[in-house]
Amino acid sequence: MEKPKPLSVITLEDDASYTETLKLLLEANGQYQVVQSFRNPVHFLCQLPNLVAEVFLLDVNLPKLSGVQCVSEVRREHPTSRILILTVHDSDAMVLDAFLGGADGYLLKDESLENVHLAIQEAVRGGAPMSASIARKVVRLLGQLKDQGSSPDPQELSEPSVVEKLLTSREYEILILLSKGDRYKDIAAKLHVTVDTVKTHIRHIYEKLHVRNKAEAVARLLS
Amino acid sequence: MEKPKPLSVITLEDDASYTETLKLLLEANGQYQVVQSFRNPVHFLCQLPNLVAEVFLLDVNLPKLSGVQCVSEVRREHPTSRILILTVHDSDAMVLDAFLGGADGYLLKDESLENVHLAIQEAVRGGAPMSASIARKVVRLLGQLKDQGSSPDPQELSEPSVVEKLLTSREYEILILLSKGDRYKDIAAKLHVTVDTVKTHIRHIYEKLHVRNKAEAVARLLS
DNA sequence: GAGGAAGTCACCCATTTGGGTGATGCTTCA
DNA sequence: TGAAGCATCACCCAAATGGGTGACTTCCTC
Image 1 (cartoon, rainbow over the protein chains, first blue to last red):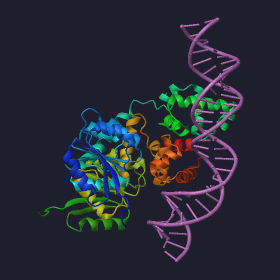
Image 2 (cartoon, helix red, strand yellow):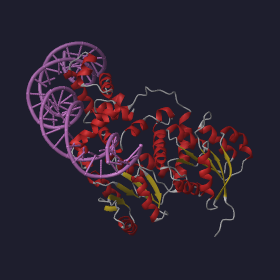
Image 3 (spheres, rainbow over the protein chains, first blue to last red):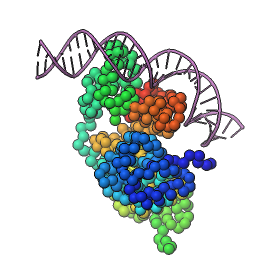
Image 4 (tube, each protein chain N blue to C red):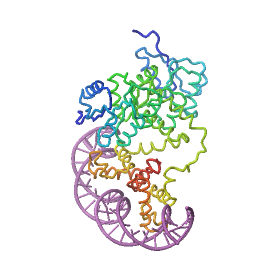
């Protein structure tokens, strides 16, 4: 049982020597390959759409950008990659930002390099590795958010979403039918109009939502 | 560096043989002492105020009592003890219940006994040990609770995981990409496979979810 | 009464999608 | 060892989709 392909890793870390240490560690046994290392978060974000990696290892200690902003950028561009935060910061806001942005794990730099290695493995396996203190924080935050959310809520499903406001009622109606799996001809039959009319409506939906097909439109509707 | 006092552990577990196994494991190296083992949750709760232990190891598979009820009882009586859930159940509701009730960690029984041992150590050290799949769930729940601070309904929350469990990881991955508006060729490029392969995966997704096209599949995913 | 948004319909054309069938290699598990 | 599941690829073909352009009506508003 050998590993034909090392997992590709991209790092973002402003400390050059730590970057080097990480690279050495990760590549030591051929399990990972650090294909690119960024020091400058802006460069990183600019290159983001062109990057390809299974694992992103990020220090969110960024001068200007917020952590959540950065992480969610990465997540949006690379929905299937694993994103691990590796930083010295452990504020509630930072941790919450990271996970809400879509991070898979959060490690503190006082973690041993051995543990960093293990954490990456766990993330790739589908886990959510965290340093012990971070894990407790997450659990606590979970409880806090829950408490906040339970009181002032009329429990309305018909909450006027962004999508609903943007589209006309006809367009919204059609989008709903799309999400149920109806094809153009099905919708046309249900609404007693022609397929061309349905097409026109759907074209308008795409323009307004800035999407390119049914799947993305439905995702927007239900997001 | 010897251990003068083993940590006291109390277990609640209705499978007698598993209880025995746990006891043997934990006491093997003198690090822990299982001071009491309960089979019956009612007896356990009745005795609760009289119990003394540093660690509670609980199976929340209880016939009558809800998990959160049980855990929060223990937490109220023993605010400084460590509470670990060790069970086969991994529903969103169960996990949420456990942590909101005050659990420190959550392990699935398919975890190796070795890992159970490590998890207890981590809990005692102040961590929040979780099985990998549980950790991911917690992170996801965190995001969901934040998104709609309004409707933290366990029924609702457990819905997306149905899809996630039904599909293979590859299929799930592809479905995610579909929801982002990617076409077959886009997905093929990102995953480094041919378009035909993507088609095959998508056909399987449709069969498993009983849907007929991208839009309906994405709707099911995001339900 | 002009202008604009919304809803309706039509035609053309290329691309995408879905469905069928079949096949290979690799694990896992009984 | 054999079955089953998974991931991969291929070929064929019909249906569905998307993009472009243009046009007609109604209703509302300025």
